[in-house]
Every structure is written in C-alpha cells, then in structure tokens.
Image 1: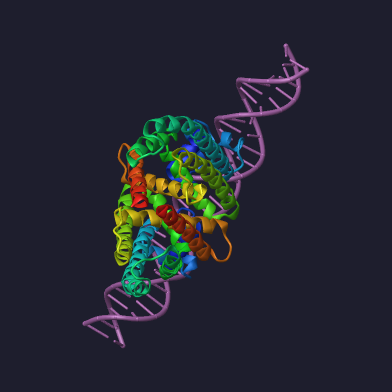
Image 2: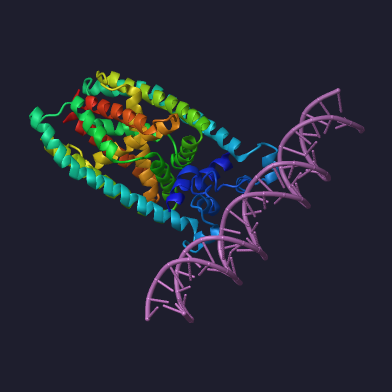
Length: 200
Length: 200
DNA sequence: ACGTTTCGATACACCGGTGTATCCGATACA
DNA sequence: TGTATCGGATACACCGGTGTATCGAAACGT
C-alpha cells in the first residue's frame, strides 16, 4: 500500500498501472490481484487510510495547542501580536508531516470526487471532518486569546486550509529542494497579510 | 478543440483517448493526427486558449467595475456595507461565465503542472496574470471606497480566487442542477464571513 | 480547367495493460 | 507427519489505444 501511495501520487491514478505498483513493492501483478480486485479499490482504501492519518495528526495538534498557547499567553497578558503568531503557526505546520506526496494524492482524489458522485460524498465527509478538527484548533486559539470569531470557526478552518493548500501547490510547481519550507513561508505571508487586513 | 475541451474536462487528460475526442467532434482519429501530433499538445493549446478567454472576461469586468462602483457609491456617500457588497460581487461572478467544465479542466492542468516542471512554469505564469488582473479589480474597488488595502491586492486576489475555487469545487461535488449558483452562494457566505471577521 | 495541396478516412501493425487460470511453495493446523 | 490453505508467481488470451502509411476527395490557386 505504501508503494501504491507513492505511485498514485507521482503519476496519478490513471497513469499508474497495476504493474508499476506491484513492481515498486517488489511483487508481481499476480500478488496484487490476490489482494485487491481493482486499482480503484486500492486507491479508495488509501484515501481512507491517508485521511485517518491526517486526522490523527490534527488531533495531536489540538491537544498540543491547549498546552502551548496558555503558557505563551502567560507572558503577553492574554493578547497575541502577529509577530508572535508566526512561530506558533510554524510549529503547528511542522507537526503535520511531509505534505508533498500527500497533497498530490489528495488532488487526484479531489478530481475523482468531482466526477464521481459516490466518491464526492466521501470526500466531502472527509473534508468536513478535517475542517471540523482544524476548526476546533482555531476555536481553542481564539478562546485562549480571549476573542470570539465572527465567522464560524469551521468555515474559517476551511478558508485557511484552502489557502494553505494553494500555497503548497504553488511551492510544488516552483520546485526546488525545500518545497515544504517555501510552502509554509508562502502561507505565513498570506496569513499574516490577511490578519493585517483584518486589523486595518 | 471544443470537443476536446469537453472530453478532457469530463474524463481527464489520461482517461481521454484520441478516439473519444475525435468521435465527439464527429471526426475520425485520422483527422486528429493530421492536425495535432499528440494529445498533450492539444491539451496545452487548450490551456492557453482557455486562459486567454478567462483573462478577456476579467478585463471586461475591470472596465465594468469602474463604471458600476462610482455610481453606486454616489448613493451611499463613499462607504459600502457588506449588504451592498453582495449584489456587486454576484453580478461580477455572473460575468465570468460557465465555470464547471472550465474548473475541471483547470484542475487537470494543475495536476499536470505539479508533476511537470515546464507545465508548472506555464501554469504559474497564467495564474499570476489572472491574479494580477483580478487584483486590479480589487484595487479599483478599494480605491472607489476610499480604503487602501493592507495586503498587496494581487495577494488578496490570490486568496479570494482560491476560496472561490474551493467553493466551486464543493458545489460540484455536492452535485445537483444549479452548481454554479450554489458555488456562488457558498463563496459569498465565506467572503462575507471573512469581511465580518475583518470588521470585528 | 488543371495541377497541387490539404484535410479527412481507412487500414494495419504494434504495444501496454488487464484480468483470469493454473501452478508452486510455504505456513498453519490437525 | 500429512493435509489444507493461502500468498504469490507464471503464463495466456484479450482488448483498447497509438501512431503511421496509404488513399480519395474536395478546395485552392493560377
């Protein structure tokens, strides 16, 4: 399944052949067919696995932020400047692990989800769960700073997630060695920009 | 080329066969090969064409907003409430034409762009141009209201474009008859939410 | 009105991927 | 220790898509 994840991410679901996947895992096609019926089945299984992993990472972070934020706020008396926000967000992003392959896979899934109603429903549920989880992080953050968001925090999570993914996408296209780092930089820039806009 | 655009959008670049494209256009594969060398070449040609069309629509809108906004502002004395913003954005969105197929095509292109450095450069240039164009619309809007954005308007355009596309994506997945309408609704909701956040 | 050229159709050879049927060996189990 | 089961390998038949070569006809220029 790890091999399949890589292959799917690298070349896409259609360009990926059963042969490629089997070969990457040092198996033959025969081995594949004795474990899965179709490529699509495996792909969907991977989608679910990936989503669970990602959700677990987010859950870890929500536990984390409950610890980190209050101690940080102890120093600055309940208010947080944009400057201080940077490192927090950065450390949060670090926890989410390697994203390049995952994002490619996710993009592939997205496309499938837009074309297939069943997959679409599944994808929206997954995204909803992720946004919800992320939303509770944001909620906790707002809470800790003593603000109440004007926008539903799940919706806010959605918007932030989208802009993060857009940044990641741009970084991937630009290429180079440190994709993840440039993505984070790009995202931080836009996030702080938005907050600046928000404050003006 | 129209046929190819449809087929590419509906099933994706890899699943699309030369046969399908030719058939959709009531031609044979022979006709295809006497006009293009490969499927990919046609795809990229379509990407360029689509981008030009979209850019033209945006340019139309920027001319439009310079007319519409000042007259509207005459009434409300240079300030615009979120309530009044709605119809303006809505009418702007209407001008951008049918988006479902275009977005599917674009998503396909995006994926290709993330995997192929050359296409990636091309895509980023296109996106940059679109963001720039859209940015000048936003700039004009800010100008008209007498505000100066805290964030570079091109960056802001980028973020807004991303959240619009995310809304469109969600609407497509939800399916139903009025995809475009629900996408706009979803987008407006998030946009106004953001502005509310901005104002609080 | 006559070459020429261009566009599309037809036919063919080729290849890569699929899925299935059969076989082998190792492991589990009685 | 013998047998059943299961994971994987091998081999085969099949199909859909590709690209090219050849041909006809219609459009074009002179």
